[in-house]
Length: 181
Image (cartoon, rainbow, N blue to C red; front, top):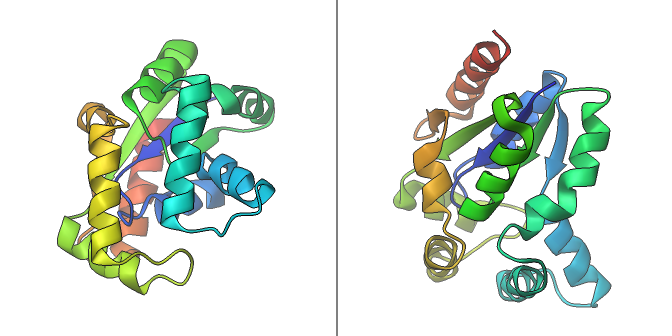
């Protein structure tokens, strides 16, 4: 069984790629569900500011590998039945924890999209839209505070998402074939 994590900046297409993996039989685990659940549990509005506060609180409490650590049992349980795709790896520490824990059974897929394209997509998305200012602020936070650049640089596979959704899905399907070979 394999664990594949998807990494990329906000609006790059991580969730779209994860859905292709899920359609190919992988169990999908979205790290951001922990943030969303905690925001709701505290009775806060689901928005960029509150999500950032919760992400930072969880990392203060559980360390920079918080999301990987908090999802290990869920991943291990899913691996009993299928391969797993992790939607939304955030930090270098999460990468090193998962890579160390799953070893050769772990792969990292980066989804890269230019800031201009991502910001346009983020502004137009139905769920959790972001302004250009919010998106740029989130980029800075993820690079400076969560060390997201490291996992993107160390990815086993990089998908470029600058054109159509169909092309991204085709590229994801090719990547799944390579991982399973």
